[in-house]
Image 1 (spheres, one colour):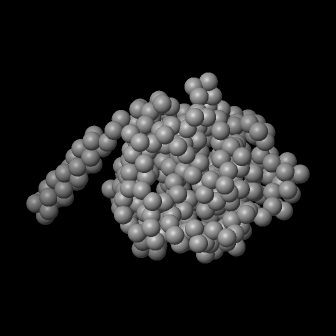
Image 2 (tube, one colour):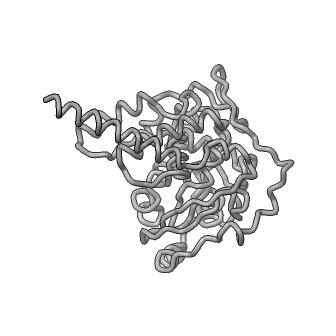
Length: 311
């Protein structure tokens, strides 16, 4: 019995050492605080092959925070992580509920990842669903919260999310689906893209499940109205708008059959519109007041149940 206990202890120590060493090999999180910083990560196409992807201003689709509509930021926060401005990288309550759910279902389907955790995963880790990756993800999310502002975390997250076949980042997504820069997205288009985030390949692929995407985007718009991000007129206008994504199935089929190759950092062209003077319009926490439509003052009044309502 003693030998078994010793073996278990040794196994746990070895496992923790493995996690520690692997985390030590990851680039410093603090580097991400520099808005001129560029790095290259690997992203996977729909065939399962990896391609280099530039994170930073050298990516031609990179959209700095100041050019991302506040409605886009709020749509994502309300849809993906209603407690974003209350936690320090991970949501303990959500993790407990996810563990309970996964134990009941005997699976790893529910991850309870915050926006910070998703950003950490996309920037530093693989997409594999393992306990080890989850430990790393939580640690990196905590470090990101210590080194970066909330606004910077949202900026990074929105610039690396997957929104289609080899379509990564809100800048590319806006051009791909609507033929416009992210700065010109309407509230309906913002909610539409946010609605795709849980599963752009299958579950929320607009070409396979357009009705499902529209239904979820309507729920996101309703939350935006409830929190004061949209006024009554803006809300009704957004509901009446039909996202113009028709006629693009052939484009999707073409991309899937012949996935494009991303530009390398050396050949990528920096977007000319990005200038040092265009500082980020930070989302700032204001726990005592609800957010006005065009500010980035994340209210602490976002209820915990709002996350469950749209998922």
